[in-house]
Amino acid sequence: MNFDLSPEQKLLESTAASFVKKESPVGRMRTLREDAIGWSKDVWRKMAELGWLGLPFPESAGGFGGSFVDVAVVLEQLGSTLVPEPFIASVLCAGMAISRGGNADQHERFLAPLIAGDTSLAFAHSERNGRYDPAWVETAAVRHGDEYELRGEKVFVVNGHAADVIFVSARTQGNAGDARGISLFAVSRDTPGLSIVPVKTVDGQNAAMMSLDGVRISERDRIGGEGDAAAVIDEVLDIGAAAACAEGLGVMRTALGMTVDYLKTREQFGVKIGTFQALQHRAVDMFIRTEVARGTSILANLSVSHEDPLQRRSAVSAAKVELAICGRYVTQQAIQLHGGIGITDEHDIGLYFKRMHALNTLFGDEEYHVGRYAAAPTFPTRIGGASR
Image (cartoon, rainbow, N blue to C red; front, side, top):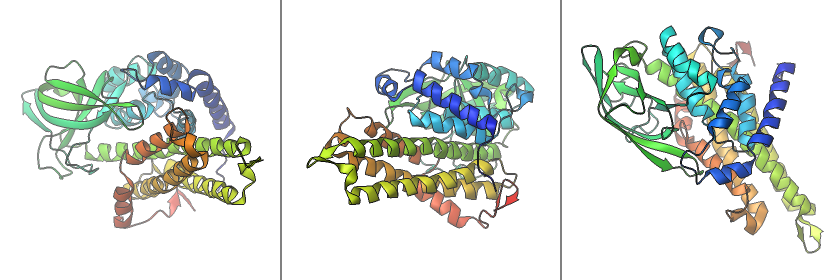
C-alpha cells in the first residue's frame, strides 16, 4: 500500500507549514499563555479563509469533504509550532458531533458560522467520575414539554472558556454507564444557569469547569434523537484521539529536530556533543520512536472513519498507546539531551514536553487505551478497506 501523500495533500502540507511559521511561531504560544482566551480570533479567521475549518465536513453541510488524512496533514503542522487555536475542540469534536448527529437546520445554525471562522465551539462530555468512559454521564436532562432542564457538571472542557456554543451530553433516561439514554444539547455560553470557570492546563492552554443548574434548552437544540447520542459521542471521542496522535506527531518531529540541531552546535570538552556516540544512539532511538508513532497514527487516520466501530476503536487505541509511549520517550530525551537549559521555562523544548503530556491525557490515557485494545474482540486486520 502506498502511504505517500497525494500532490494535493503535499500542497496542503506546504501551505500549512508556511502558515504556522509566519502566523504562529512557537514564541506566540509562549506569549499567549498569559492571555485570558489563549488564542487569536484573527488567526482563527485566517484558518477559515484557507478552508481548514471546513475541511472534514461534507459539502452538503457547507464543508470541503476532505478525508481525515487531509485533516491530519494540517494537524501535524499545527503541532510543530504549538498553534493554540482550538481546532481539535471546535472542528473535530463539537463540529463533527453536529455533522454526524445534527439536521440541516443545525448545520446551518452551528456549522456555517464555525466554517466561516465567526464562532468557536466546545464539546463538554467528561465528568469527574467518568474516567474516560464514554457512557458515564451523570448530568441529567429532564423534559418539560418542548424544553429540557439540564443539571450537572462537566470538567476540563477544552475551549469551554471561550466557546460561543458548548455541546453538552446529558442523560434523558437510565443510569450512569448505560449507553442508552444519552442525549446531546447545544448550549449557548450566555444561557442562564450555566456557570463557566476557566482553568489553566499543564501545557499553558485553557479549559473550563462547567456546572449546569436548571439550564433550559429547547428541543430544537437537541442534536439527534432523544437518548441516541452514545454512538456519535463514541465516534467523536475517537476522532479526537486520532487528532491528538496527528498533532502529537508534529510535536515529536519538531522536538527531535530541535534536539539534533542542539547536538550539532553545543560544545563540551572542545568538541560538538553530537560527535559522542552515546548521544548519537539516543538520537537514533528518538527517531525510531517517532517513526513508530507515525505508523500507528497513519493507521488511525485511515481507520477513524471505518464503518466498523471495532476496527476504528482498535486502530485509534493502538495509535494512542504508541503516542503515550513514544511521545513521552522522545520529549523526555529531548529535555535530557538539552541538559540544564532544557528544564528552564526560557527554552522552547519544555513547551513541547508539556504539550505532549496534555495530548497523552486527552481522549483517554495509555492505561485506558491499553485496556480497550486488549478487550476488543477483533484487532486491526484491514486498513481503509484494503488488506494490510
